[in-house]
Length: 177
Image (cartoon, rainbow, N blue to C red; front, side, top):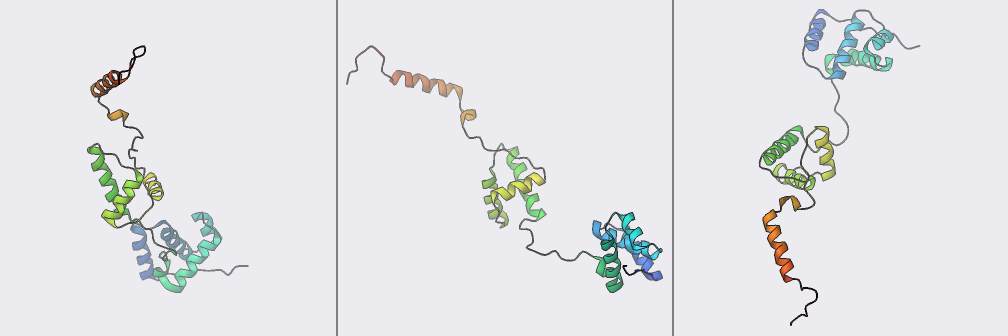
Protein backbone atom coordinates (compact mmCIF):
# COMPACT_ATOMS: atom_id res chain seq x y z
CA UNK A 1 0.00 0.00 0.00
CA UNK A 2 1.42 3.42 -0.97
CA UNK A 3 2.53 5.78 1.72
CA UNK A 4 0.11 8.58 2.61
CA UNK A 5 1.48 11.95 1.57
CA UNK A 6 0.14 15.14 3.08
CA UNK A 7 1.26 18.70 2.50
CA UNK A 8 0.77 21.27 5.25
CA UNK A 9 1.38 24.85 4.12
CA UNK A 10 2.40 27.74 6.31
CA UNK A 11 0.52 31.03 5.99
CA UNK A 12 3.30 32.46 3.82
CA UNK A 13 3.23 29.38 1.60
CA UNK A 14 -0.55 29.68 1.22
CA UNK A 15 -0.15 33.28 0.05
CA UNK A 16 2.62 32.24 -2.34
CA UNK A 17 0.42 29.44 -3.70
CA UNK A 18 -2.46 31.86 -4.28
CA UNK A 19 -0.12 34.35 -5.97
CA UNK A 20 1.35 31.70 -8.28
CA UNK A 21 -2.06 30.29 -9.24
CA UNK A 22 -3.33 33.77 -10.16
CA UNK A 23 -0.90 34.27 -13.05
CA UNK A 24 -0.66 32.49 -16.38
CA UNK A 25 0.90 29.04 -15.94
CA UNK A 26 2.02 26.16 -18.10
CA UNK A 27 -0.62 23.39 -17.84
CA UNK A 28 1.57 20.89 -15.95
CA UNK A 29 2.63 23.47 -13.37
CA UNK A 30 -1.01 24.43 -12.79
CA UNK A 31 -1.86 20.77 -12.11
CA UNK A 32 1.03 20.46 -9.65
CA UNK A 33 0.03 23.62 -7.77
CA UNK A 34 -3.57 22.44 -7.60
CA UNK A 35 -2.42 19.07 -6.22
CA UNK A 36 -0.51 20.88 -3.47
CA UNK A 37 -3.52 23.05 -2.65
CA UNK A 38 -5.89 20.09 -2.47
CA UNK A 39 -3.47 18.08 -0.34
CA UNK A 40 -3.24 21.01 2.07
CA UNK A 41 -7.05 20.92 2.29
CA UNK A 42 -6.87 17.27 3.38
CA UNK A 43 -7.62 15.48 0.13
CA UNK A 44 -6.02 12.06 -0.43
CA UNK A 45 -3.79 11.32 -3.42
CA UNK A 46 -6.40 9.09 -5.17
CA UNK A 47 -9.07 11.77 -4.77
CA UNK A 48 -6.70 14.49 -6.05
CA UNK A 49 -5.80 12.34 -9.05
CA UNK A 50 -9.45 11.70 -9.94
CA UNK A 51 -10.31 15.39 -9.55
CA UNK A 52 -7.41 16.54 -11.73
CA UNK A 53 -7.87 13.68 -14.25
CA UNK A 54 -4.27 12.52 -13.83
CA UNK A 55 -2.70 9.27 -12.70
CA UNK A 56 -2.13 8.81 -8.97
CA UNK A 57 1.60 8.59 -9.66
CA UNK A 58 1.49 12.09 -11.19
CA UNK A 59 -0.30 13.57 -8.20
CA UNK A 60 1.97 11.77 -5.73
CA UNK A 61 5.10 12.87 -7.61
CA UNK A 62 3.96 16.53 -7.49
CA UNK A 63 3.49 16.36 -3.72
CA UNK A 64 6.85 14.64 -3.17
CA UNK A 65 8.56 17.25 -5.36
CA UNK A 66 6.95 20.07 -3.38
CA UNK A 67 7.94 18.57 -0.05
CA UNK A 68 11.53 18.13 -1.24
CA UNK A 69 12.07 21.51 -2.92
CA UNK A 70 9.14 23.83 -2.37
CA UNK A 71 7.58 25.86 -5.17
CA UNK A 72 10.78 25.89 -7.22
CA UNK A 73 10.59 22.10 -7.56
CA UNK A 74 7.16 22.31 -9.22
CA UNK A 75 8.43 24.12 -12.32
CA UNK A 76 8.92 22.16 -15.52
CA UNK A 77 12.37 20.68 -15.78
CA UNK A 78 14.50 21.27 -18.89
CA UNK A 79 13.58 19.00 -21.75
CA UNK A 80 16.06 16.46 -22.96
CA UNK A 81 17.33 16.38 -26.50
CA UNK A 82 18.29 18.91 -29.06
CA UNK A 83 16.48 22.26 -28.94
CA UNK A 84 14.33 23.17 -31.94
CA UNK A 85 16.26 24.61 -34.87
CA UNK A 86 13.55 27.12 -35.72
CA UNK A 87 12.30 29.59 -33.15
CA UNK A 88 8.84 31.16 -33.25
CA UNK A 89 10.54 34.46 -34.16
CA UNK A 90 12.10 32.77 -37.23
CA UNK A 91 8.71 31.48 -38.34
CA UNK A 92 7.14 34.91 -37.73
CA UNK A 93 9.79 36.48 -39.97
CA UNK A 94 9.16 33.84 -42.63
CA UNK A 95 5.40 34.42 -42.53
CA UNK A 96 5.93 38.18 -42.82
CA UNK A 97 8.24 37.60 -45.78
CA UNK A 98 5.62 35.37 -47.44
CA UNK A 99 2.91 37.99 -46.93
CA UNK A 100 5.11 40.66 -48.51
CA UNK A 101 5.90 38.37 -51.45
CA UNK A 102 2.21 37.50 -51.92
CA UNK A 103 1.30 41.19 -52.01
CA UNK A 104 3.79 41.60 -54.86
CA UNK A 105 2.43 38.55 -56.71
CA UNK A 106 5.59 36.56 -56.11
CA UNK A 107 5.49 32.80 -55.60
CA UNK A 108 7.86 30.73 -53.46
CA UNK A 109 8.65 27.04 -53.34
CA UNK A 110 9.50 25.33 -50.08
CA UNK A 111 13.09 24.82 -51.24
CA UNK A 112 13.41 28.53 -52.02
CA UNK A 113 11.87 29.41 -48.63
CA UNK A 114 14.34 27.10 -46.88
CA UNK A 115 17.25 28.82 -48.69
CA UNK A 116 15.88 32.25 -47.71
CA UNK A 117 15.59 31.13 -44.09
CA UNK A 118 19.20 29.90 -44.13
CA UNK A 119 20.53 33.12 -45.66
CA UNK A 120 18.39 35.65 -43.82
CA UNK A 121 18.09 33.99 -40.40
CA UNK A 122 20.96 31.47 -40.34
CA UNK A 123 18.60 28.51 -39.82
CA UNK A 124 19.38 25.38 -41.81
CA UNK A 125 16.22 23.37 -42.42
CA UNK A 126 15.03 20.95 -45.07
CA UNK A 127 12.18 21.97 -47.33
CA UNK A 128 10.10 19.04 -46.08
CA UNK A 129 10.46 20.00 -42.43
CA UNK A 130 9.71 23.62 -43.26
CA UNK A 131 6.50 22.50 -44.96
CA UNK A 132 5.46 20.60 -41.84
CA UNK A 133 6.11 23.64 -39.64
CA UNK A 134 4.19 25.97 -41.96
CA UNK A 135 1.24 23.58 -42.13
CA UNK A 136 1.20 23.33 -38.33
CA UNK A 137 0.85 27.12 -38.22
CA UNK A 138 -1.85 26.94 -40.92
CA UNK A 139 0.21 29.12 -43.26
CA UNK A 140 -0.75 28.96 -46.91
CA UNK A 141 1.65 29.69 -49.71
CA UNK A 142 1.47 29.50 -53.48
CA UNK A 143 3.17 26.67 -55.21
CA UNK A 144 5.04 27.47 -58.38
CA UNK A 145 3.21 26.38 -61.52
CA UNK A 146 4.86 23.62 -63.53
CA UNK A 147 4.07 25.39 -66.82
CA UNK A 148 4.27 28.96 -68.02
CA UNK A 149 1.04 28.78 -70.04
CA UNK A 150 -0.71 31.06 -67.60
CA UNK A 151 1.84 33.78 -68.31
CA UNK A 152 1.60 33.62 -72.11
CA UNK A 153 0.37 36.62 -74.11
CA UNK A 154 -2.39 35.42 -76.51
CA UNK A 155 -1.50 37.93 -79.26
CA UNK A 156 2.16 36.85 -79.22
CA UNK A 157 1.11 33.21 -79.35
CA UNK A 158 -1.10 33.82 -82.39
CA UNK A 159 1.70 35.68 -84.19
CA UNK A 160 4.17 32.86 -83.44
CA UNK A 161 1.66 30.26 -84.66
CA UNK A 162 1.27 32.18 -87.94
CA UNK A 163 5.05 32.43 -88.36
CA UNK A 164 5.39 28.66 -87.84
CA UNK A 165 2.71 27.93 -90.43
CA UNK A 166 4.48 30.17 -92.91
CA UNK A 167 7.74 28.31 -92.39
CA UNK A 168 6.29 24.83 -92.82
CA UNK A 169 6.39 23.42 -96.36
CA UNK A 170 3.07 23.10 -98.14
CA UNK A 171 1.98 19.66 -99.27
CA UNK A 172 1.78 19.05 -102.95
CA UNK A 173 4.38 21.63 -103.97
CA UNK A 174 7.99 20.59 -104.59
CA UNK A 175 10.58 21.98 -102.26
CA UNK A 176 13.03 24.37 -103.76
CA UNK A 177 16.38 24.31 -102.25
